[in-house]
Amino acid sequence: MKVQLLPYLCIITTFFIQCKQQEKKPIYSNIEVEESQEIFAYDTAIITSQYTADPSAHVFENKIFLYPSHDYESGTPEDDLGNHFAMRDYYVYSMDSVGGAITNHGKVLDIDQVSWADKQMWAPDAAEKDGTYYLYFPAKDKDGVFHIGVAEADNPAGPFKPEPEFIKNSYSIDPSIFEDNGSYYMYFGGIWGGQLQWYRDNKFMGREDVYPDDNKPSLRPKIVRLDASMKAFDEEPKDIIILDKMGAPLTTSDNEKRFFEGAWVHKYNDTYYLSYSTGDTHNIVYATGTNPYGPFTYQGVILKPVLGWTNHHSIVEQDGKWYLFYHDSSLSGGKTHLRSVKVTALSYNEDGTIETMDKMVTAEELDSKLHVK
Ligand code: FUB
Image 1 (cartoon, helix red, strand yellow):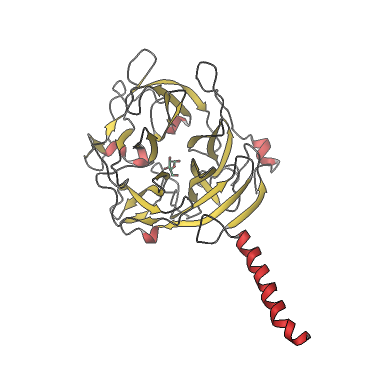
Image 2 (cartoon, rainbow, N blue to C red):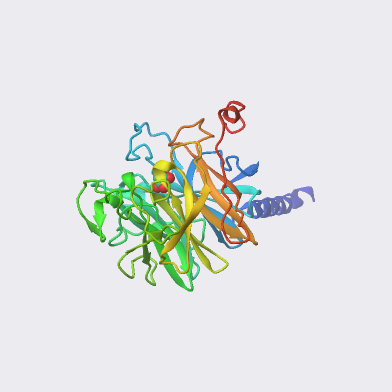
């Protein structure tokens, strides 16, 4: 009797073990998933297993998905062109809601899979259309020129399959996607290492850094509508005009306010908010308008400089609460090219203006190892 029962017992035990394993299996990804045990708090690094930066956050399938850059130590010396940001792959993270455990969905795209790309996979973003997910990413081609590529997945956690060529007529860096009334728009551009200054009217003018004179309108972020395939531009990219409160365009000398990189658009109470980094003055600022193309009117600072040279953000709403995802270099003890994603609540005033935040980590806080691994 004992002997006859044994195979059945084995089958039943195996069945229960398999069920248990299936329960744990990720619903989103067909690759390994690492569950973080960490329950994070506002303004501390929310991912500590690797360095992450440039967080693009979106709510997909009722969760917040994060599409950050993946910083690592390449040993490349620091320069004004950002060559020390030598990233080579992307990972995706998600959380049910801000403050909960974070799931690392693993590597979703590697530079070796992208035939046209040579180096520097910088700030990405993602979008969903008709159940398909698209990852947009800048990288330098073999000639050292930035373009924007696109990769596709059937779920928000990837892995993403890249197109063999970069998006035709794409250039510069920091794509972000905003959907409005069924149309998808890409905002892009960045000066200095982002190469926007090599172009005029979407034409490559050569590798010389040419900026408008100090009293002339500064270089502007670009907007372009994507076509139905989500993999091509549907029009020529256009300049986004940013005006001061007197109605005059921001000029090159307005470098506390003018666009540098990292454009992001969101909508709140029928107003369109364009936010971006001022780069060498290290603020995240915003301007408001009445449609995705602008013009936008400068309003003020959202986030003052953080620890590290770059400041890069995204804004997302979940269940009526608004969040600012950003990064700083506190986890690496201040190394500019080794950044970590953080999150905080974003507050609007009655008139729709956004409250300014200061998240600079003091030397004392760094010393106390509050932020350092
Ligand atoms: O992460 C590399 C570059 O640094 C990004 O593309 C910029 O926005 C800045 O954060």
